Amino acid sequence: MVKSITSLIFRWRIVLHDIMVIPVAWLGAYWLRYNLEIIPEVFLQGALFALPVVIAVQSVTNIFFGVHRGEWRFVSLPDLNLIFKAVLFGTAAIAFALFLVAERLAYVPRTVIVLYVLILAALMCGSRLFYRLIKERHFSAQSGRKVVILGAGAAGEQLLRDLNRNHLNRYNIVAFLDDDTSKIGRQIHRVPIVASPDVLLDLINRWEIDLVLIAVPSANDKQMQRLVTICERTGKEFKTLPGAHELLTGKAQLGDMREVRIDDLLGRDPVKLDWHRIKHSLCDKTVLVTGAGGSIGSELCRQLASVCSTHIVLFDQSEYNLYRIQEEMTERFPNIKVTPVLGDVCDAAAANHVFEIFKPATVFHAAAYKHVPLLEGQVREAIKNNALGTRIIADLAHKTGVERFVLISTDKAVNPSSLMGACKRVAEIYCQQLASRSDTRLLRFGLVTFLVRLAALCLSFSSKSNKAGRLP
Image (cartoon, rainbow, N blue to C red; front, side):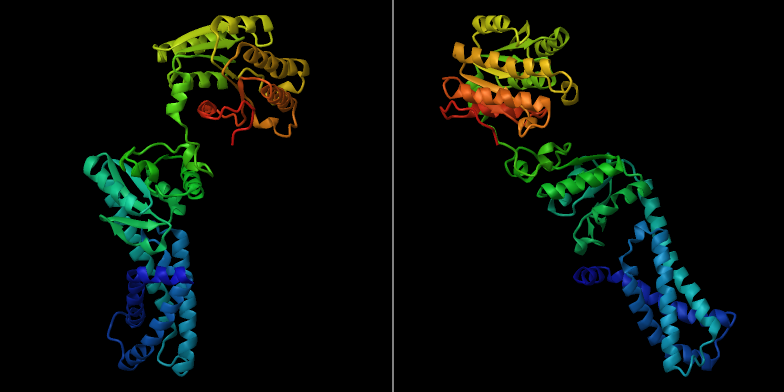
């Protein structure tokens, strides 16, 4: 009810238009009834006597049906159908009211009722269609990519000014969309706020929008998820403003649009890493990454190289994967020493040779079989590689005095229901037991995602505790 009243207040122009066309339709029906000639005096007086009743009843009916809520720029068949219903119901109510107050419709010809319906519907529908036609021609004549901005707040207004000032011929800002119903119908620098983001798909289909910009830096995770879902349904390119924290700290400007990141959709604040401490832990030291050619291991190598690791030893049993990550690392990080070692973590002699020759300060153990359905029928290999291989590497880390040993595990090890998860859980338990009697800090990184940069958080622990545990 409150939203309806608010919408009515800010859409008074539409309501006023619909009220003004009612007497035009009513008197026009009389005029047309008498062949566009002078209306007889007695019938003209009857028409004027009934006019207040007609205006009042029809206006209340229009408001009841919500005719004023329809956006003229997006008027379509459902909107026109609603207008016809409002006119028909209003006319029936008018006829009933006049039957009671005007001596059974005295001096109201029956044809006037029919003509009134046709004329009023034509005026209400025609004005809306004409307005839409004019607006569509106006926007189609402008150059640049057609853009819709989600969010009509301060950030949206500043974004519009920035685009108009710096990219005048590149972007054509068509409209704003905002969930605040009190803003709908207003304009920001002559760009209208037309509706809520829920109509985005319809708007894109009508106006052939090229780009959607999300200008809600203060949105929480649920709000951002909703907006991203709406944008994804359109299949069009969409970008977002930097978050409020980035804007306040000066790390980004309002015009710096970017792709939506996973941080924008998280149900919690992202983990903040102590990069200074991480760099201090890695600089001028050797880091060993087992399974370096895999999807997790290769990404981990890239992140390690970006934070000042002096020497990275790549250990993998796949010749092709090892060659590929070595070539990439050499090309992207020419200042980092990269040493590829072809070998199997289950080969204790080969692994021991690596530890003795390179003496790593930190070991990231990412070597593991991870495909759950495949491993269900490969019990021996799963246990050998995921459990026994981990034991060999962990024992060598303990034996050679490695500072930190990080086990890259999986969430499937929590109450495991698969062979793969069970093997990783066994590896975790072994590392926990070893941690209780080792000077090496054995850590377990459990939420394995492709963004294994978070694994580096393990290196920022300042505690001297050597017990393995789960990261939050």
